[in-house]
Length: 331
Image 1 (cartoon, one colour):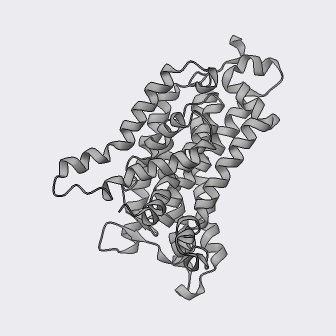
Image 2 (tube, rainbow, N blue to C red):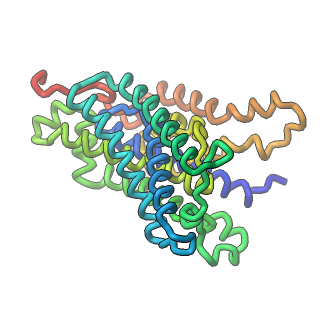
Image 3 (tube, one colour):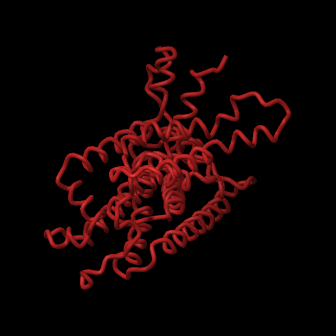
């Protein structure tokens, strides 16, 4: 029998980094900016939180002196600041200087991974660790802590209540983003900027301000995916190059959800389940079959790309001005 009670929680925790990343990228793309630097942003968000947690733990006279509030707040704020800096760099290059967005995003990914590996390696040396990783168990325990009564509710508690607070935060952010995009004037203005910045500018909407604000906000949300991966999923253990391809899957998830953040909630958990499905399907000693199972998320992505490109409904298409710079004097 397939063990859904153990499979679903593991699929959820696998999908949360994808949910943070896809929600942030959806907001960014709705403004007309195509940020392929999400993997680098998540990397910087993760290492920024690790830096904050490391120096906070080092400042404590003893592990018992840790403050629950600061254990959560210090890495959280450091992550937001690091991700914000990445967003500002991207906006300055693409919005102010009108650099090519594809090249800038790819450069940002390379830059973010390099920054993460550099500071991660430096912290490992400072800690004097004998292995190429650093463990921040004191602060990560507060990120990983589930509701105290979850264990008493059987399968319901394990499936729905056995997660740290960042899982519920990811779902809340996605639902709020969907509401703002579809039901508020700010969301209407943002969608107008992404569809036709010339028309939005003529209507009195500050195009550059919307691009800056939403791209930076999107980077901060995506950076939380990196923080979640390190502090909750990996239990505070940082290892260089440990994120894998989660950042790229988050970008693919934006297309999978047809630019709707609320669809991203279940879709990210679906991708998380596909990511670990090879662990639950018996394949014996045939490693080739197991590798084929690992391809499932990418095969699904390709199928969705084909279906999306064949569908002609306007609401299923990306913003018309996605990836194109806007120069006011050219309108």
